[in-house]
Image (cartoon, rainbow, N blue to C red; front, side, top):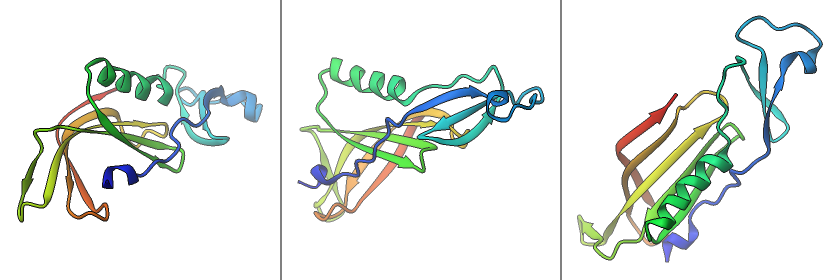
Length: 149
């Protein structure tokens, strides 16, 4: 089945926040006191008030909520250069439907994003995963979303 061949990047990479001064020995200016290190690379300089949400916390809680709800799903994980991370939950639904030539299958999908470099807000989206052909070609489209600051 095409859902068994989904992208599976490692998204639980080691990350930490360190004071910039401990790395440089120089007093930083206000608002740039800490660095975020992801998988051994400095990827962001942030304020002391920055709320760093670890992938382990965010994605595992999202997955647990789906398990608690009794949903069956397939996961797709995307790691963009150890900076931005996505986990899609493609929900198995016996009420799936088809469009166009009666071969394009549509499944509900939840997408969760987390970013360590500030490019994207930590967010979640509800949408659909559309299988176009059996080789795995698909389209993912979000319809409803939330984000956190």
